[in-house]
Image (cartoon, rainbow, N blue to C red; front, side, top):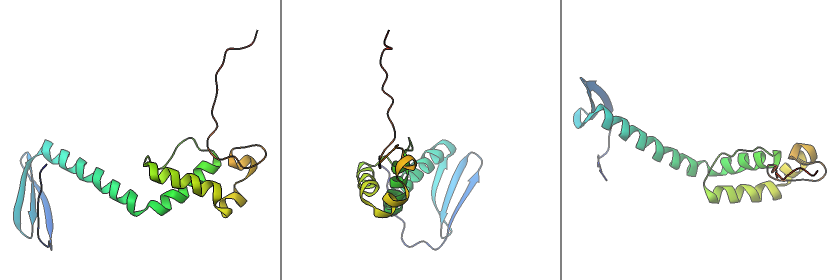
Length: 126
């Protein structure tokens, strides 16, 4: 694992020279990367930033996921197990969601059904 420690940064600049990507911090060059290494670094940074964003916005994701669960949507907004479990609890117990997403709007016919429907396949009767 590569670690780059940079003290308080006032300005960061990213440039390219030929086939390399240069990173400057406060006017000093701190990295000179070939283009493929720069792509890998950018991808890794994006992945970690999105994971942090998921943690920071967990409350909103939980509520939005609960709405999707109550409406029977077959997809989710997160794959984090803690967020999914909290969204299930929210979908079942939130009075506002229970009030406005019931019956057919909640993926069911009569009462409140939470989750997406499952298709069970079996052989046809003759």
